[in-house]
Image: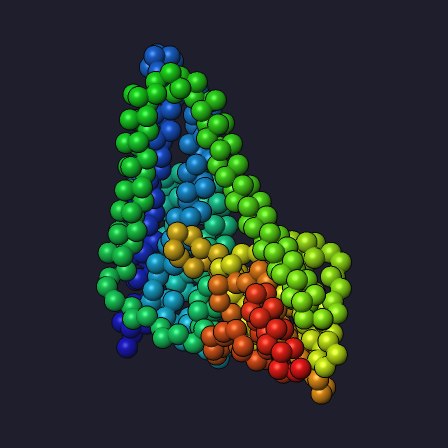
Length: 379
């Protein structure tokens, strides 16, 4: 029994030791990678300039943060225990988790081992950075595991040896950095003139990367605006052909960009449509309809394919109980890839024609078809 209690401590000590020395060698690889861009005849005589060490430090610090995330997420034994405990919790509390982190023996061992080697090999600043990084990484891991427990999925079995699993993670880091080194060496030989102006090269590469993110950000919003414009054009045409009175609401584009709910009313001699429109810019962001006029938008953040954490935003709408001759409709435009009925962990997959709060859920095009069918049946 005593050995079982010591198992988490030993597991954490083993994990942190392997992780630290793995990262130590990774930093050596990073220094070698950066040196490819700096090495020339001048550096062979005078050594590397101060900017070389600064770049190495910055890249190593960024890589270390993701490495700490990897360390915390790799502890599958702790994950299984946390998920089992979280089933009894009603909500995720930052304060409670912070207190729990400082009373978690596994986490304290992780910090102690990392801090010891940082103080021996590096300096006190490395110790402080390690402390902050591990706190943030462990918090993200707990947030992710709590979300996982809410989904009600079966806890994966903890198979294999923790140290071996961490060695595999380190090997992946080696492979990635090694590939970058090989590509950089090839690029240096093929594009020697470009590498001679390394500063320009780095600025161009960084600018291209930032430009790509900006382009993706803008493209998604342009696409959403085009989809919404197309829906309202079709809606106007359908209403005109079926003698449905309709007035386009103001600020439809603003509502899409801010992902705000809009309300519109369409009237026919024999039927009235009370509608709310819920736009979604990122199609991979699902919606959860909770009932009572509430819908939750859940956005999940990933590192590679690791689910880091999810952010939730609660939206509210108001639809009165439909009277005779009235139809309540929830329109998803632009639509997400999927939506659910119920709270996370106990939700069923929704489809168009699903009902919540006495309202039918449709996409923009499906709603236009619904208008035609309903008006035709009412004649």
